[in-house]
Length: 309
Image (tube, rainbow, N blue to C red; front, side, top):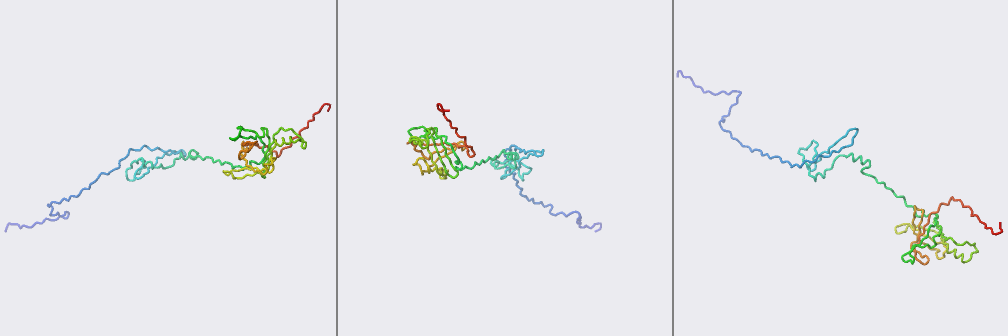
């Protein structure tokens, strides 16, 4: 057919820089609904009221510098004591309750207390005064003692309820303890009229016997008391009373005036002039006569009668 132009099938060219579109462009896309993530608010622990500002521990000055230190934070069972040191371990610090605070010990050294300790302000060592060892009774007895008094005290059954003096208040005497274990005691009532030996009458000798009492023999000290205390025993190997020979008697003893006075007594009331009484004899230590000089002789006084020169 003239004048008619041939018709060609025109295919669109694909440009290299463009991607082909999908034929399903017009097809609506299916919208897939995804479940939204449910977020819950972060629960935080309730905070207690703020703790008071901690007391600053002041250390002593060292070389002109003074250091101040705040006690560091200490965590117990998830609680802190309210002090922070720049680290929270990933969680918000909360104030510990009072019961937990009691368990918290303050760390560090209090140098003020240390100085007080070194100066004896906190701890003091009491002086342990060890008493001196007890002197044995034998060592305290050895020597010579002069009689000061001989008193007999009444018992509840005594007819005379007052102290008496069996050998008067003027009695004199000595008692001696030797280191080798012997003793001797003498008592004298002064005031008897003198008489020559071999010339005295029987009454004079009887009076002399009544005014004098003496005995001697070994003495013994043993630890057989109720509390294991030392017991003193006198023996009568020689005595001017025949009935007392070979007797053994217990003597109670104590010391007074720093050991210068010896007080002797009997274990039980003794019979004195028919009465049961408690005898107490006080002896004072005699002066040391080991280096003494003998006294001068007593001058003899001659009494001249009429017509004598």
